[in-house]
Length: 131
Image (cartoon, rainbow, N blue to C red; front, top):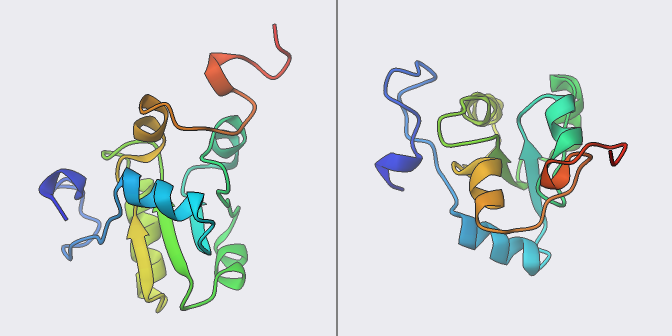
């Protein structure tokens, strides 16, 4: 865990370190089809526009908590290391007793900048109508 993958010290979303996973380890887990629950912490529009393949999205906390088991391996992410949505989701899951939660701090931008595959309506900057 490095200081560059931790929330900014003024973020006020808890003082405990956030356990993280790097891009390469996450990609290896996904490539091996390990049972990782990859959860995008951004809103529905952002998820529909672009997300890492295999990602899940939940529209409300009840849906989230009823869909994930306490001992699932869960990785949360949002757009960048500075995006706090994944930090807030990480903290909420840990506070609800989830034991195996990590944050992919680089998020969507890091994944895309490294040429890794994406799914969604706005891949490659296009629009869903293709115009």
